[in-house]
Amino acid sequence: MKRRISLGRRRFLLRAAQLSSVFLLAGCDSLSRKPWFENFLSSAEGITRRVQRLITPRKAMAREYTEADLSPIFPVNGTENPDTEEYLALAQNHFADWQLEIAGLVEQPARFSLDALRQLPSRTQITRHDCVEGWSAIGKWKGVPLHILLEKVRPLPPARYVVFHAADPDDTGDYYYESIDFEDAYHPQTILAYDLNDQPLPIGNGAPLRLRVERQLGYKMAKYIMRIELVDRLETIAGGKGGYWEDQGYEWYAGI
Ligand SMILES: Nc1nc2c(c(=O)[nH]1)N[C@H]1C(S)=C(S)[C@@H](COP(=O)(O)O)O[C@H]1N2
Ligand SMILES: [Mo]
Image (cartoon, rainbow, N blue to C red; front, side):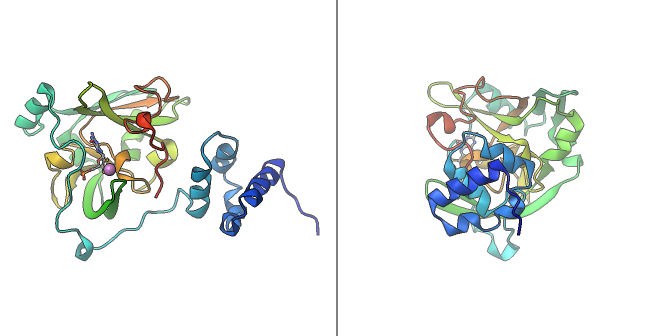
């Protein structure tokens, strides 16, 4: 029987064999036909990420739970209330003056008020949030799917990442930010949430708007989003590693 096997795939199998993990090979037949798979094989990302993607294809849905599974209290972690004049003024006015700005590599930069976002199609999902600090909680999130907004602003061809700029600076003045690639940006469960457990998002949990990217760890889910920027590379933003914690050594792809 003739076996057709590409060079890329052969290299991959070799690497997989070197890792000597049987599970690595499971399912790689179907995965290897997808363009993103080819891309990441040739990329310099860490092996963890490759293994991650082999076990759970990124297009797969994160598990969703029922109302009965909701945590009694959804914890507040990291910034609890951004301590800037600008944010405090916005909060004072219940975010009526807040606008989400979407700019960068897009055809049609735009701004959306909270009301405008609430009028767009929404998605509600009950999911588990996992923080690297060792806690998990199940919450019900409602928000606008990110792909709906991207369809409105129309990313330009070179755009590859979506960067979320938050309202909270740390002690040294560095603002929290995060980034995801287009695969996660267009995932159906990637939403910009304005409600938690059927209530407007509390300040502690990121009012007026926070990211939910359900296949990744808690630190990816930027709270207090002020501005979204589409870029072709992450090196030019802040510390250059694609996120506040990444700039301090955390993994950029925080898959769970
Ligand atoms: N802007 C901003 N976003 C943030 C953080 C933060 O400190 N500032 N902390 C992150 C971390 S580590 C976690 S676990 C979650 C916590 O979200 P919660 O406060 O709703 O539990 O938000 C993430 N997003
Ligand atoms: Mo976290």
